[in-house]
Image (cartoon, rainbow, N blue to C red; front, side, top):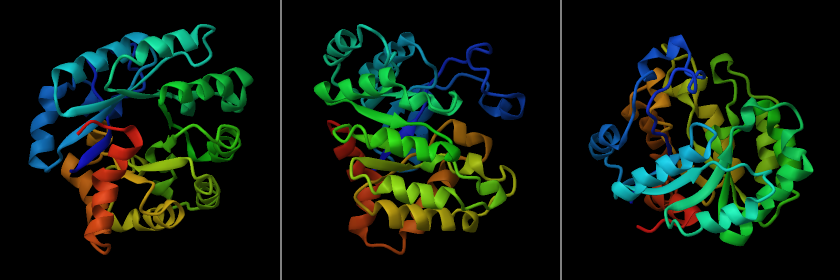
Length: 276
């Protein structure tokens, strides 16, 4: 089974989706399951995990409705106010949805120290009671904070999105490499090999540009805690689906079939407890 552990759907709204800037005009439109299904089929991908792209409860409900209507959406990572006074009650209600696997907050847009607020730590800690996971969407300069956050929550299953967005376009490795190795020392943290093409030179990247970064995450997390994610349709600003996937599959060609199966599907199935 090949599982895309990270992709998005949306009905484009200019104001809400203001993060999609004019130079990203190729994705300033609707992207729905009918658009993705033939792409998955063409790339021999069996299923996917739909991840929130905006921060509202309606976003979570939207993704759950799509997952209910489309068999190949195997899981949903939604959004909920993790500092809400009634969070536990909300999580209890959400736990009835079998395809809802976890939650994410767009921490990359928050001020320094956001993750270390007591209310946020407490809220993420409550996910454990319902076997929900947490996706960490951060910039590379937030890795130290992410470590200090995750170390306080050893029972939460974390996954780092987009290898923490290193500065691939500039070829910078430090302090990203050191910080990501430190985070990987926490056994409850996994990592999505996703979102790399949008951190590179959109028009002129080459597969060799990503190898140093792949070397670091494969050494740090090992084959048991890495999973493939396309970041479709965001990846389209820099690569077609096939190109984004090919960066990882080419790299994995020097490993065993067993290792390839883990990174391309098995790890995501186990992390998100997908019903395949």
